[in-house]
Structure formats: C-alpha cells, structure tokens
Length: 287
Image (cartoon, rainbow, N blue to C red):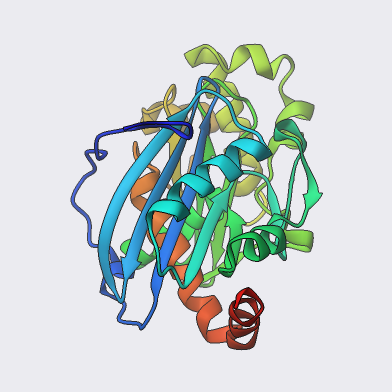
C-alpha cells in the first residue's frame, strides 16, 4: 500500500509464542502502536486486540521521525480502523503521565498523550518503548520477575532498558529508570563512532550491562543488540571487570515487536482497571 504514512510491509516472521494479551477477555477494541527506532529507519508496528482476539497485525516503515510523522502515522491508522476504544502508544524517550521527552526527535516534555486523546476522541495511553517490551517479555516468559531488558538500537549508542523487579515494572523518579544514554556518554569515549563496529558495540553494551549488574543485580538480562549476539563473548568481556559468579543469565533475542505489542496491551488492560473515570471523560468530551 502506497500512502503518505509510508509503505506497509509484509507481516514480520516471528517465532511462534503465546500472546497472553490476545487471550485476555475484555469488552474493548484496543489499538496498540509502537515505534522501533534504528539509525537507518523507523518501524511503526500496529496491532488490534478486539475483545480479546488479535485481529490485525501490520507495520509501516518510514525514513524519518518527528511529531508530524507520528501524527501522520496515527491519522493513517485511525482513519482506516474504526470503533477503537483505547490506544496504547509505545515510544522511545522518557514518558511521564502522558508527556514525552526525547529532544533528539523534537519532543520536549510535550503532553502528547493528552493532545492525541483530544484530537482523536480516544484515550491514548503513552509508555516507553523498552518498558513495553519488558512487560511483554515478562508476560510471555513465566519466572522472569527480576530482569532487565536491554535494547541497543542498531547504529545508535543511546541504549535503553526496561527494569522488572519483584514482578513489577520499575520506572523510577520521573520515569527515567532505564535511560542509560548518559552513562554510556560518560564511560565510553567516542561512543557514537564505536557503535558502528562489533568491537565498539561490545564495549558500549557491556558498559551498560555492568551498570545494572552492579546496582540492581537482576536474575536475568535479556538483550537485543545486532552487533553483539554472542552471549558467551559478552560474559567473557564482563568477567574482566566483575567476578563471573555475579553475572546473571544473559539471553539474546532478535525480535522486538514480538514483545512490544503484548506489553503495550498489558499496560492498556491495567489502565482500564485503574482509570475508568478518565477513560469515560475522554469519550464524553469526544461526543
């Protein structure tokens, strides 16, 4: 499909996994959206969960990303899919009660959750992209109640992480938990250039992982990083700086959408329970 929003891609070939969000019975038609950022492209995934059944699963690729690109994408989707009760939107950057802070993309603590809810007359739930991924991974893998999901974007030294401790997502002060970019900038000289090589990517990824191992000490680390897929090499590198006995299990994964959409849906179901009055208010104002 050729459209202003971009080109629709074939459905991503993902490993078959149980999607707990699709099995969660409810009376809502929920649209989940997520942006997966890499240096050379931006993938916008979207999925509809209709009363507990997954009825749509597609994605769009765009060469640029900004606030107009986001609204363009949402205009494209909402115009084609009606009777949506709730929208879950997973975005890179710090998300805090509907606001998004990601200066690289031109968002400076803007309340896009409120603005998009008003524009479409549909409650929009905003959450961080890696937090959504961590929630999805936890839901799809029982026994992962103490973990860090670490996302190293392709060609970008600015990594991020979703932290699950004692079974709960931890967002921290002003929801800044997991925003590891400043640590990388301080500890790895020339990170923006180094991330382009496997050797440099190993240094950057291990610097980030070590900061979590030495602070919250998760039982498991799940890693997405194109240039560092070998977890044994990662363990060997980390063992230069810390006793190997303190290095937790490390799993490398090569899919993000697999976890992002279910995680976003899980968050939407939580909001439905916790913020019924707000949802009804948005719908009333739309009418």
